Image (tube, rainbow, N blue to C red; front, side):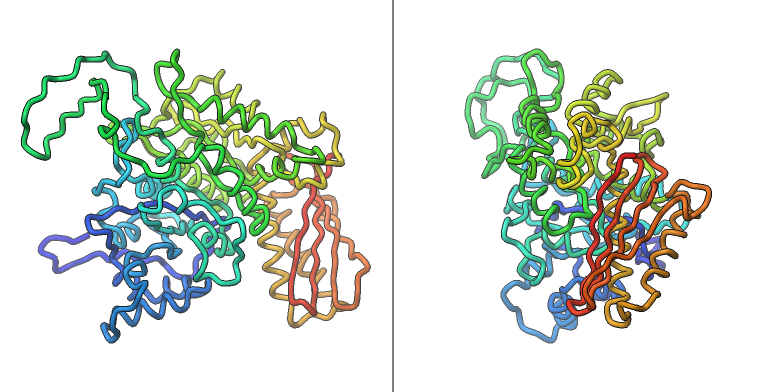
Length: 527
């Protein structure tokens, strides 16, 4: 942003050294006229480059600096690097995002639908994420952006089944998002946009006969949404198509295998039934999700059904007078990160007013919200007293691993408190924090050294003081017991009583000195 006669220029830069309890990753499109980005702005930001290099992208960071100095000839791959494709970038303000992608809000994307138009959804999701940030408040929220090329279509957002995290430069965008250690939430706003059917209408209008053929100058838009389309080339081609249900399994399996502490926010796909006046959640998608959740805990296909705990489905979309249809996940992720920062990762965003002036679309009644929350288990946004808020952070399956589910009866598995997204976030945050403690102790702790247990007790004492655990005293809130192991391994069984909304969690903390690894296993206990 430039002031007056350009003698003063505001340069948005992130403040270094700030850690958010839950970081968010978004993957999407940032359109520009020539496909470029302000890569030189990033190449001269040492603090951000250091964070990117810490993920394993040292070669890309070094190449950006060399290109900025102009001391090297062009090499294969420089174009994609200068466009900042598939490069995780930490964003801590909307202004910093706009400085890197100044044309993203004003440039149309390649895919167009009658309902959502041409605009990319990632820029508006970033804006929604930072909506309501107070200038006088220390906002530690961190949003990572990964730009993907529009030409890759839906496949640019999906993980590969054989991917591992050992060679970051060979990973696709989704797997690169999993390299961010403190990330707990991932959102794919432009994947949701590509799944909106191109011909899906808004409120139905009266059909008018096709106009008589006349000659018009090039560039005149004659699509008034009334005409009957008789030729297939009147709507843009969308390339390879995917059924919405086909993207669920790859995402759930990859998160369960590589990052069991993370969740993916995903808006329900839209569809139009003949009797509906406006689009509604796809009945076919809801039926398939409900059928899959009914297999939770079974011996044959229960494994795949259990992995759905890594997805939080959201409904409806958002719309405003000057805001076309957009993803709800940016606003929901921003609220989740803000509540985690202010009140703790164990607190829900349900019932809290969401910032901004956007409205849910299609409109949702309380009866519809209740029905979707109960079956199959959807996080629904509703208007209450004129304020937009989340009705309940529901999930479609219990937030427990398969081993715990198989020990429970069907009646116990059906209890609503197991399907709370905030509990899943809390469990994921516990995993990350205990991994951090384990990594700090790998090289300098003897199995007989009491400092490991002291560090664990100090951690859970702080949790109790913050209100995450119930009980008048710390010994009523948690129990820690060391398990017998080999000479090189430490194992602790930890039981905690969370304040919200389940009874107990049992955590097994494993620390292997020879393998230099730390592992955490979490299960829930009812009673």
